[in-house]
Length: 158
Figure 1 (cartoon, one colour):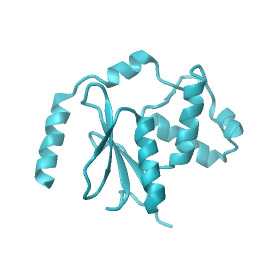
Figure 2: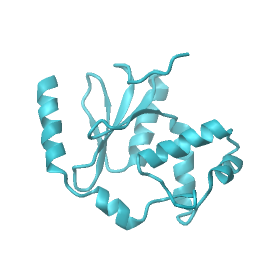
Figure 3: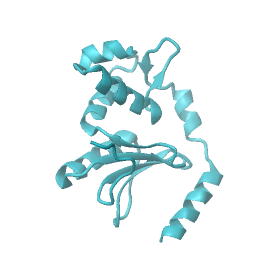
């Protein structure tokens, strides 16, 4: 099976709006208006419900379209819940595999996805943990150039 590189028109996409204060996410499906969500967790929940009902995939895309990837909603939600319930949780990949009963490939993909979308960070010791509040605050800094670029792209596609 060949890996899909971009979402199909009927797939649901979580957009990360970094330029907004505070950082915001939207859930969108082609041809429908975007639904704003204040957190990644809420966006993941809404996107997952739509995807499950309509038998489509959930994707993630950041403002600059640097990161476009399919998401395994149920596992990501479960892992994020563990890190939310235990704020000091700090696991190596091997520990995460054992905790969630995942094979190495799946565990790597999930943890790397959460690191790529900056919901987890990987320390020098190889442990995955939630980002510090200071690091999250840096992500919410306005990026006017990106906002202008995004608005321009939207006008072109409208």
